[in-house]
Image 1 (tube, rainbow, N blue to C red):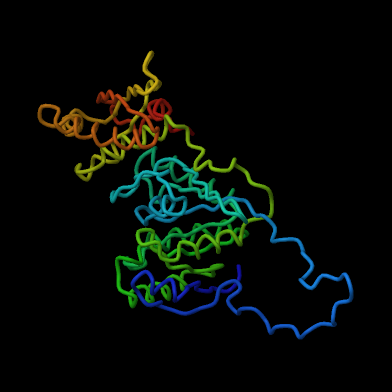
Image 2 (image 1 turned 60 degrees about the horizontal axis):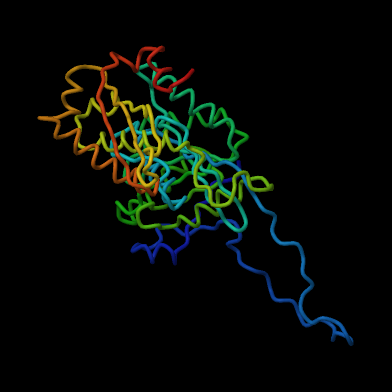
Length: 353
């Protein structure tokens, strides 16, 4: 990897409401060279404009957004794609699958791979998620190592930096996330801190909330992609099946306002989904929420079923926006005892070896 360089555009920083914390160069930062002198006077019938040459080569490939849990990977994925393709929560370990979001540009197709946070697992589910992250890191063209601007560099960040030593042939771009949450001075301190973690291809501070430097990050990631044709049809924003996305939206709604132990114990399976016969404007969705203990089931349902009803209303609005249709959502809560540690239950819920 080449020497660390911070990619930061001061004009974009000011438009985001903050001065640029550091000035540094990125690809093409030196600007154009001196203008050429006048050439010979064209003869009769000659063209006076420059002869058209081949345009920049189209690039297409995969960029993995990775890091420890709860660093803003899913929010950043959604912001770059310009649509919600991954659920978000302030609870760590919300993402449980590799989710692909597709960014279409005139010069490139950038496929963002949002991964679960790498951590020291305490369950079989955690082990499988970590294995999923490691296999993804080995398969992509560039890695975006996400580190929040406001959090001191900790053991989780150092642990992940060491993991990246196993994929030395893949360029790594450090993405300092959540820059809108801290003053510019703190962002500058974090930029210095992350450069000390290793030799990175680039370092880019961003904010998914304000849009600060998202275009710069996309440019940097695209620069590391191989030349080649598009890998997905134009306009496609994700390759996630609708049924999986609906299940994730239900889980996102269920995660809001629950106790600390509960988010890791919730799984959702859409058992059946499709247009209601005779009503093409209405989609029926039948889904089951799985928890591990009776006490957790009581939390999800709430007094007199009030909380489950609230989860259903919140999820239905998101599903209707996704499908572009009215939705009838039928939810049931079931117990799958210790499903995070049970290989058979994990396979049943879609978490394979």
